[in-house]
Image (cartoon, rainbow, N blue to C red; front, side, top):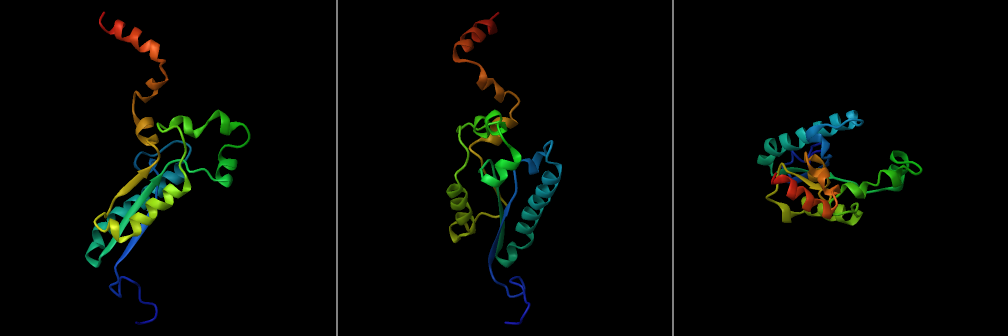
Length: 156
């Protein structure tokens, strides 16, 4: 083994696991630098998945939703803002992620058990991205009793 030789030069198999975010696909207001950076990482993930597969090197990514940490939440949602803008309220599963869930997914993606997964981004967000990306997802705020009224109005 020569000093300074990379795994690629040594023909060692491997796995890259990147962290992106769901707005890497769409962009998002108020997080422009992050959206641009994560979009670049997403393109890198998928490009290397194709280019380096011949070296038996896989490249995947995870797009996590809210996984609260004290440092991040205290800066992003200081004081009473955490109550006013409760992230769990935007998630169909009505909770934020547990760090062990994220760790389990990461462990799987770097393991041989996921050896046929390459160039993928796995979203782990309790359905947040799907719900909030939908044009009419906000209709879940309509009370159950009002749906009957809407049904009657539809026939007119």
